[in-house]
Length: 182
Image (cartoon, rainbow, N blue to C red; front, side, top):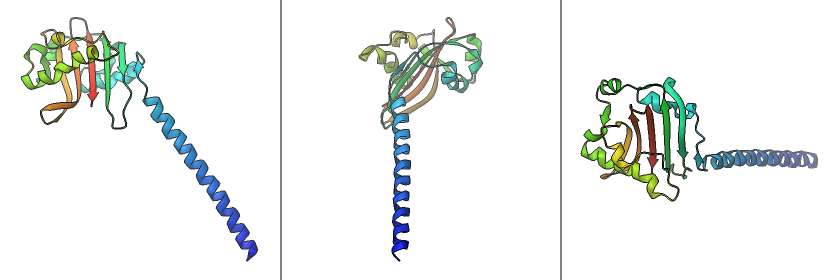
């Protein structure tokens, strides 16, 4: 019986060390991944990182010439963030934006509710402690020079608390992407 208890004691000891090691590895893995995503990254995005935005709005990622600017804020535990990209496209024609079944809205024809949602986009970077001066301002975004694609807007009451919006200006072949969740 003593031998059996010794073997059982060592089995539990080995099992305890093994599970502690696994728990430690999982903890390190989780927190290192969480930390890497929880730092603000400026001008680090690649064409692969921004491809989804072009695919969603129907322009296609093959048009990406260069990610000129990018800003990816840290993520809170609840997912709160602000991301913005300025992407130079190889080509974009105004006729393809107007012929896409009404998915694109010309900035100066934006319905009132959407305009109220978009206004904070251009002002966001001006009002933060780290202004990103490359993102267009409100008056530009809501002008006839920009086409707007609303990817998603989440409303709480009559205020938006999350949005993914794409702006394109055919003149300069620039696409601006803005994502926010508060």
